[in-house]
Image (cartoon, rainbow, N blue to C red; front, side, top):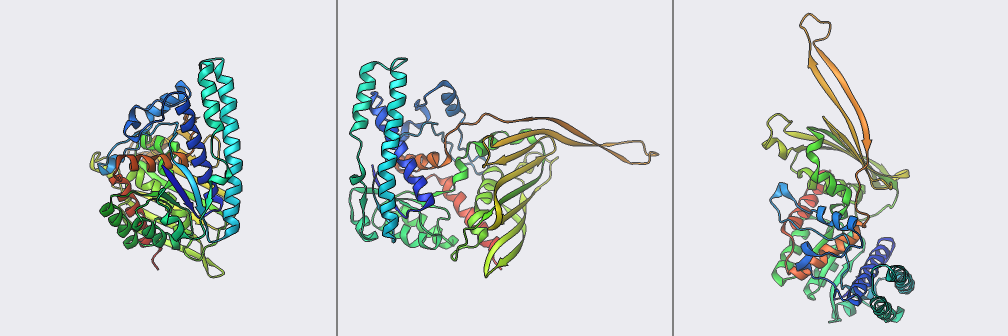
Length: 429
């Protein structure tokens, strides 16, 4: 399946790198006689390189249980037959950079797979299989295969392109996405899908009418640490608070404020874990040079678990701090429970730390100085073993899986609309 990239910069390069890595892996599996795999066979795909990876695959779970959504697992090895053939950017220098990076990434990826093939050929792969894999990779496309489209219209007119990856500034998403859909292309769009709930709903409606896929890259839905938290929420007991910090220096943007740029990620995680039924909210902003560059957001969310367990609070208090003014980069979410506390930090090698700690309040004798005694439980800190696959690769694979299945994931559509709706409420002045 041939795809093209619209927009090239920091994140565009990450997308290009992921696409090349996944396509080369697909070719390698073909050479081994596996023939790749279809999205229809996702749950049974066994493409991992090791038993630990296969075990991780069996644990993978994209279930959105709080919204009665469909369940689908994604393999930890996301080889797929997306073949990127072209790029368009309004800045020709960026297109040339993409072409240069493409050549280097193809060579780097090919050599990496060849090295692994040679190392494994004496262990498990027959020599003829290793030779076939090496031969097929030698035929991988070179830089000339990455076409530079002079205009966006030229890209849309290319009937070879079945899917478009839109990695551009947020204010351009709606227009580019709509035109791509009208040209009968599936679309993968960097967050946010659009800058209003109305525009997002229109894009989903148009895609449904045309039988196409819209996939918005809410990337932390595919983070192994977030999936682990989803599966183990019960160990925390009653959730007392959630505190998130997402701060860095820049990138200042005219089309969206710091809330739309950064808080979107935390809202996405909150929705995945508990739902995003906002009972009340308060937002404190700080402006710098005319930009809303810092914000502190307090949310009171309905706790869906309270419908099942009457002994826990009906609401969850969440605080989100976002900033474009910080000299350091922080990506941290703390979930404080009555039994355990988790700290999720995407910048660390061990992304998830579980603290065995809690607070116990006991009644004491009425004639005592204190009516209640507070005891503190401090135990060990553990770090769950998580799959090493990048969330972006899993997100791209899920886009591919939806295309092969010929239907969008209902829960993912609803999730994206809830997050954008919450952003509109929170950021309104």
